[in-house]
Image (cartoon, rainbow, N blue to C red):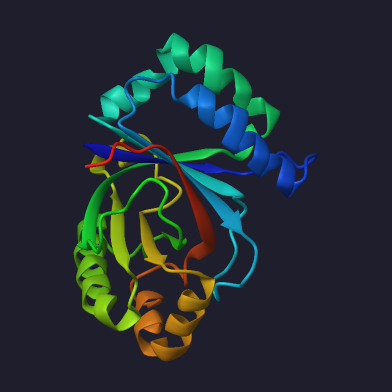
Length: 228
């Protein structure tokens, strides 16, 4: 199974509040019509507190799980997408700056089973590798580095999503990895940054990545989330 990220910048002529309300509903509801999606999550950006990372242009990130990249790409031909979510996207998304990434998901710390309605916040860390390093070297070293820092950081769940090799077929994708870390709340995240400063610094190692990466805290809205 692959996990697709859609990085969503909001239309510049609408407010943050309108973007998030529209994305939840009606957009979240019409997305449920797409039968090839196994799971679908909306990560809604929280502007406070500051994450300590450079900010991205994205107001949210959509995450969808498919059987394969081919199935994910064919979603664009699905009438349920064309007539529903696809037709609705121009109402709130700045489409020229919309970007996608297919990834493979690797769980570094499972934690408690994540219920559909479980509260909390998630740090979304968007990473580009140092281009002097190969994709395989970056993936191996960052996964090992992140895994080593998991206990110190104290996230209740820790998932690393590495760009699928097929994502590089035509051009360099916008990011090489997305690192997601869940916390009980924003205060728990801030405590982690203060108490595990060295571990966080390791994750922003400029020797491995192209700078500190971009990021924001998010509130997850789990739209399609079969309990297991």
